[in-house]
Length: 323
Image 1 (tube, rainbow, N blue to C red):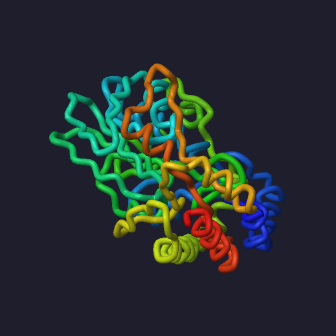
Image 2: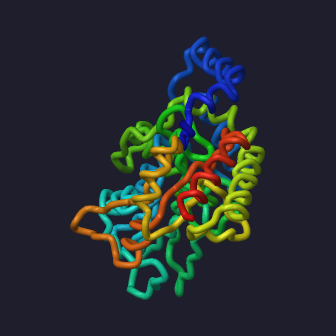
């Protein structure tokens, strides 16, 4: 079976350094908000090109705390084509989602914008007046550099480009006030009485492992790009993604009206894929263009641990199906 993502391969790739980091944290007994977290925050901010980073427990928490820090309780524009966590974070922060369709506009009166960079492809945002922008960059590490938005939200879920060994996320920002709010809010405002927060911390073990992996981020991105460009060159009979300048390849998405048939065929042939579906609750149904796109798209394996032979096999299987 060619796995869509194989966590064991990722572990074995960096085993010596992962094991050393794990042992170091446990030997020191540094489990919560210690130097490994601080080191990761410094490395992440430096990589993204911001002044600050706050390590958190998930990308969802990053969006939620960004909204809370900015005091946004009004109407927030976000795309229909996103994982439900984006919409859920807006609701949980006490704000109202204003959802727009693919190829749609953001013309309604809103108080903030959340562009979402799905699968590593940068979603442009054009704000007609000075409004806060919170980027959902959970699938786009490496694509968002030197940002001008108020906050960028990251996920380090294991299957992400920069994946941890459990849940983890972060905010990067150039705003000192946002940074200070999120840093206190992640730990219940334990030393600050201005508000009630929650447990949104990244644990030190995850930070230690991410400190290993972030050293190789450019190498990881380059291998994913190499695989994606081979797919773009060799795949036939399916719609292909835009090879947008500056994008990264969190996933490679193909499109066909016979998506379910392709999914079943690849499964039978020993190649794992994922249906590109992000269902919302009935209260906020998917809009028409998004629903059609998601029903016709499939994510095929595109990660740095794939061998050339496995990539060639995926190409062969997709092309044999499409004939």
